[in-house]
Length: 268
View 1 (cartoon, rainbow, N blue to C red):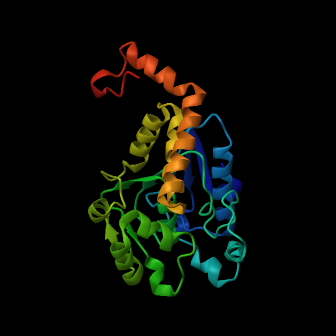
View 2: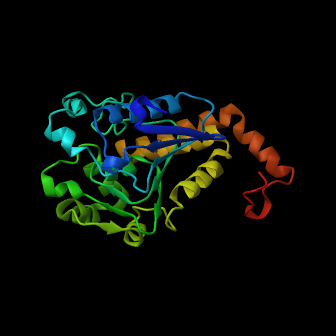
View 3: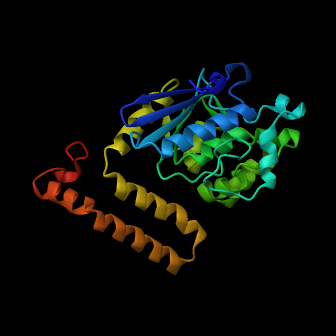
């Protein structure tokens, strides 16, 4: 358990599972919870035992956003972090991990509501496994609460500017099938299946050669900050690091010996 039991932290092999645990407020995040989430993911990134993380919410809801009662009472210290310079290695964003740029992938397991800051936390994940009756949206539009955990940046980049404007300006609910069509959801699964399916996906990813996977992931993320020539050079630099590690030759040798033929992902 994490501080004050606002999170549960479990493992399944190479996979770390971080679950919000504030059912009385639909897993809304207060200041202590924001710090606990950030610490959990910083620890994950520095722990060689875990290759992939799953981020979920307990009791049928991912996250209803910031705890507005704490905001109203002036007890949300993490809101002061917006005055600090952005630090991709620090966990001082209002919702916790939103400024972090991890070396390893995180899969979001989305059930119930992922709205307002909860939507922003889902966008921070590399992929989202979304239950068929889940709802996503900028519900904070109703209360004058801004998107300050990457929502105005990640949402347009992930689903396109026009669709992002629809969600940002109207605050309307987006259900799972529309989220899949937009590219907001990567997988839609039956009710109650987001967590086990996300763990299954994470375990599949954890089986691959990890340096190559992480370097390719890093290149895909960093290209947003670069022009085309610099992005291609960065890809080449990271690719060379993978080649020089010996991981590529080891994989090619396994293939040459008969593994993984015909696109088989089981025998690798």
